[in-house]
Image 1 (spheres, rainbow, N blue to C red):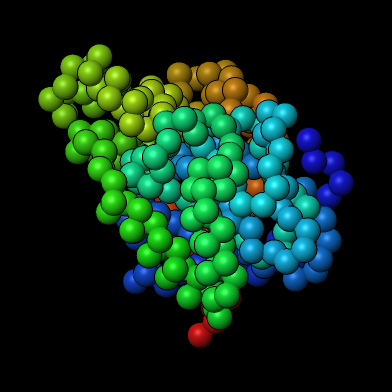
Image 2: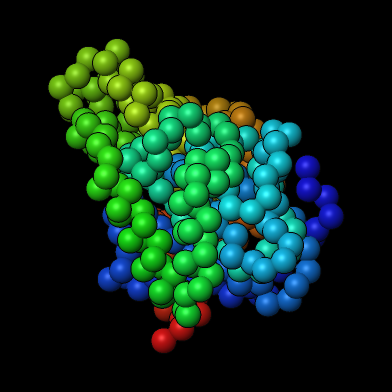
Length: 296
């Protein structure tokens, strides 16, 4: 585990997001710049996306630790990575979240990334270094977002997309906030349960049931951070009861709901990911509060 840094002071971090017109379906991006060069230790949590952390710092690298595996520099974090921490002197970092159906078209080995973390160089080979060099040479975050979108778009177009039935199943899982049954999803796409389970897991690296649990947990965690009670979150999110909710939170984070409610890794989601989590915002937080440190 990383133990040399402190929890990040988000007031000392500039966060930049793409313009609304530049956002792509299934892809979210945010740029981070640490104003003061001090080591940080950031605990991260399972999220319903495959994540690219592109280290743009000069000198000391970003370091990620998960399940005893340590990687320096840019990494790809699959679904369900387990206990994950990122730290070191962050400097500048581009974080890209890819929904699983998009990630499956971007990475040749997307299913193998479930539950794991790998260096970007191991996944993309020499293309990883060229990608990082282009991003470092860019004059603004807007240019970096454009470069990243172009590179990801090229890789998507060069590969076979997931079946429409798989994409639909994922989309329904997401829009239902994890409150849907596998049998119902199978019926919607005209497949039997066994075929849906096989194709979904083969293409996205996670079973439909596991995906439902992950999406439901993600929504529930943000409700906790927004100040809702554990009992209220359990009822609203479709858990059998509060004990069931407690067990799920423990399974995904190793923590209690009360600890997740004040978790620092969720403190900036409404700023960094305004397009991907509108339902997670507090009712009192209008769009004008979403900070955008732009390069315009």
